[in-house]
Amino acid sequence: TNELLHGLGSKLEIEMPYLDVLKPYAEQGLGDLYERQDEAVTEPTIKELSEGNPKLESEIEGVINELDREGHVSGVQVCVIDQSGKIVADKAMGNMGGLKRNVPMRTNSLVLGFSCTKGIVATMAHMMVEEDYLSYDEPICERAWPAFCPGEGIPEELKLAFPEETTIDEQWEWKRSITLRHILTHTAGLSMSLPMKFTIKSMSSCEECCKAYEYDSNAPGQTLLPKTKPGDECSYHFMSFGWLVAGTLVGAYKNRSGDQSITFEEVYNAILAPKLLNQTIASGFRPCGGGGSHPMAHTDTQFDFSKLAQLRREAESQGESLKDDDDNGDLGKIRESFRGKEWLLDPRIWNCSNGQKANVPAAGGRFSARGLALFYHQLGSGSLVSHKTMEISTKECSQSSGPNNALARLEGQGNMSSLSMNARSGGQVQARFGLGYQLIHFESQSEQIKAFGHSGVGGSVGFYHKESGCAVAVMLNKSGTNLDAKIRILQVIAKHMNWTVD
Image 1 (cartoon, rainbow, N blue to C red):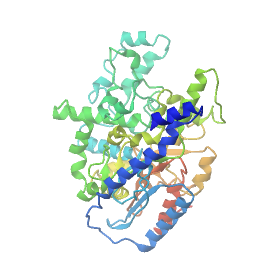
Image 2: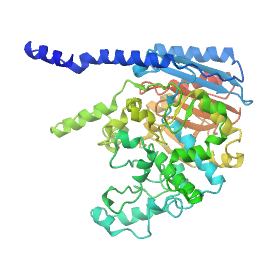
Image 3: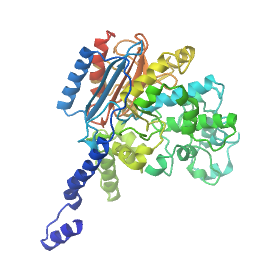
Image 4: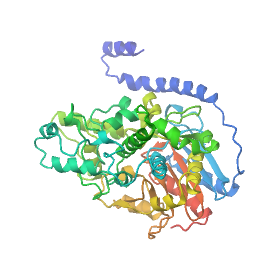
């Protein structure tokens, strides 16, 4: 068909965007295939702890319908679990997105959680600290991960690789001082660091990406070094957080087990998975990626940032430029940090085969709202980590804020008040962190932390509300259209549950 269109266009001297012509037919064919495949996957037979609260579910359905009419959502899952562990709301509405847009969203469908994954990785770290695998404050290169920064003196070949860097000795010492606490609080100084040789295929391997943060004497020019002294500045480690934690935990586990070939997923299966309820796993809980027996939603977006970035690079190569109002602001800084890796800014990469299977511990977890809410209920009730550790890890340790925070758009939201929507549009964004968790509040003027968990850049969120003992998760599979969609859903839940809200 493609050759036929080329021939006709050439003969008739007509310029035709062939791929654009073929695209809808290709999408239709693939969509029909996915529809037939997903029809064979049924809802799991899971005994509900409650039939739900009809009034709350009706209120949630109402706000989701509003968001759908406004074009802000494709598929949505919402789950609320009360203090006793009863599921008081469990809704799935809309569609599976992308090429699965004709397939309805189910309560057991897996949705990409983006940074929601960080909360699970942080929990693994706390569990291993409690079990004396490692500590929060020992430099990770001393015992847990020696290859991260070996030797006290800076290697000569590293100096030769960066002859114009006047602070290279200092940066080497900074790297040697990085601790688990620095990583969990986003103060390690490696926020913008991504592996030098980075592709979708290499991203899918947690082990390959962790190795990129180690020192390689055969490739000193690829060494990733902190840009600021660890502990001095909180800057969101959007991707590096996961690989830094994973590398540290795997190293600590190797030291005790003696198994030098262990993977991060195997550490997860040994440390956290055995403590999860069967219902949590069966509902849809895949922090290491993949779908297992669950249907996997596709990620939708209406803003192709990667394509815009590529157009900029092509224009620059021709001596031209594409300017916008934010060139010197947040987006300009984000663009610069992703230079050469712009594909990472397109959420749809996670729909490909490598993306779906990718084990990216900062952003690649796939969850149903029910599975994520059940996890946070277990965490908040003390069955995964002791109450003492959770009390320590959910106190504010660091925060990033203000118009100079270039990564604020990638952090996800911690302020769930209605006033935060207007504040963010004015550039005043604030994220507050405990040890690996985002700290969440529902009152714009209140300093009191009401909940802990983690949001994702795509809009999803999971958390435990301390005062009420409730666990909540909202999963969205459409990113980049309305960052406040989840706030509108959570405001309905908060008001119904009598939490103090703006």
